[in-house]
Image 1 (cartoon, rainbow, N blue to C red):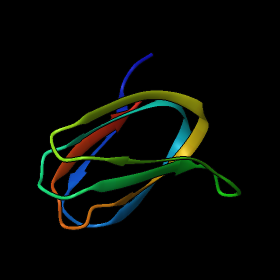
Image 2 (image 1 turned 180 degrees about the vertical axis):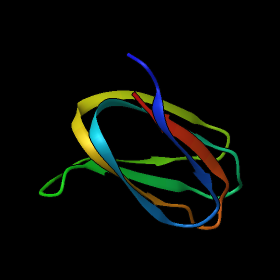
Image 3 (image 1 turned 90 degrees about the vertical axis):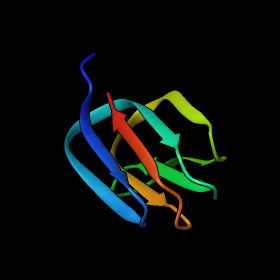
Image 4 (image 1 turned 180 degrees about the horizontal axis):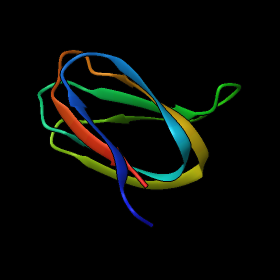
Length: 80
């Protein structure tokens, strides 16, 4: 698998990809919780809260969008 769809920020965002992904990696580089939800146009498949200083690297069902709720915390990530 090849990584694509990098994202970063300190604000909430929703990213919609033009192809299907199977894995998500996100690093919480701030001081607050970052909540991510991966899914499709019809279903939220996976929601996880990433604590400060933690990196989440997770293989999940096929998804084509990621919603990030940052609570003002800095984060970086990508999908595979």
